[in-house]
Image (cartoon, rainbow, N blue to C red; front, side):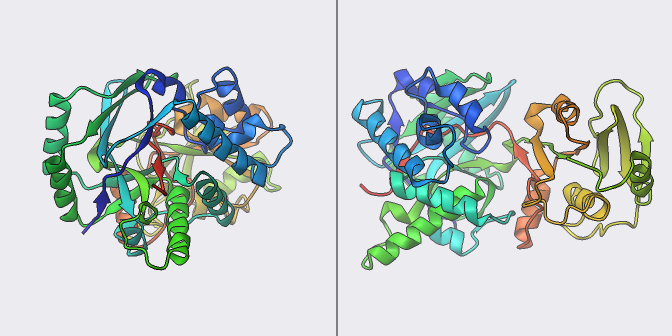
Amino acid sequence: MAIIKPFRALRPIPELVSQVASPPYDVINREEAYQMAKNNPYSFLHVSKAEIDLDSTINHYEEKVYEKARDNLIKLIEEKVYLKEEKETFYIYRQIIEGRIQTGLVVGASIDDYLNDIIKKHENTRVDKEKDRIKHIEYTDANTGPVFLTYKAKDEVNQIVNQWIEAKKPIYNFTSENKITHLGWLIDDEKVIQQLINVFAKIDGFYIADGHHRAAAGVKVGLRKREQFKNYSGKEEFNYFLSVLFPHNELYIMDYNRVVADLYGNSSEEFIRKISEKFAIEKYSDKSPYQPEAKHVFGMYLGNCWYKFTVKPGTFDEDDVVNSLDVSILQNNLLTPILGIKDPRTDQRIEFVGGIRGLKELEKRVKAGMKVAFSLYPTSIEELMAVADAGKVMPPKSTWFEPKLRSGIFIHQLSE
């Protein structure tokens, strides 16, 4: 039984939503955020990446950054850039990219569902990143970035959502700088709200698609507040965290590629020879970058050349939901034994490049000083759910969902 809760969102006035809505804090660096927001005082980046309003030498984990985030959010509220919903509602959030549509429901997700594995995870979190999000939530007293959840598609949900969209005008309709159209609808009919609550109560659970650190932080802040308010009823907003629920069959996962700084003491010839022990490798004759066309096939950019290589049968466990993933095969059969990268979460020699940046970005990184790049076939949503259902975790940076959910459109305040 999955629990969802309507809430009174803090959201931008329609006239300013296109200026407020920003990319998630963790997909752009400080300089990119600074350039994007420098001529836009309404950009939510002033809240989600408040270090852009402080000295460039400041560590983004310093208390000053969280204080600035809080102050900037208060300023946006005081300047009436944001309005507060009068009553608890659900929202529909639709994104359109190159004609492809994904439509989600904006809700409060239960921290108890997270603790009881009704909300299933597929990644480990890092302590430093969790602490960062915990502080951000505590200083702003809000979930400012949504957790991206998915569920096994259900016709009943689609019917309710589509009927509402057909009957009502959107409260938001804008196109962001990356040419993605964003639309929002307000569901304020109590009967429809209850219908959705009842339908989701029959769903076995949700899967975190993106936002493991935001989810973990939201839960830990909620638990801290339960300690603070011993007589809590369970209905308080801190018992929930901001989420957007999408049916699994509407989601699009792109490749998540790797770039490595050196060959771990190997010459290029030695490196290719070692690869050939577990992979069938050949030079790619086309002048364009090699984009893998199927599972268990990889691309590699080395010495101004692209290579195609395919894992050999028997070199991995095909029945293991984790070890049969392409990201695991690359890690276990190449990155660890040949390049010495034992923990990709902490090793400074490896970088990860989301597929949205394109394979030319891999060439660019290598030409700028990195040594070798690898292109991968995207992990599927079915693979993600199989790993989560098994109670296991994927290697880090296994999935890149696109489009990303914009921050700042819907804010879930923890105190009313």
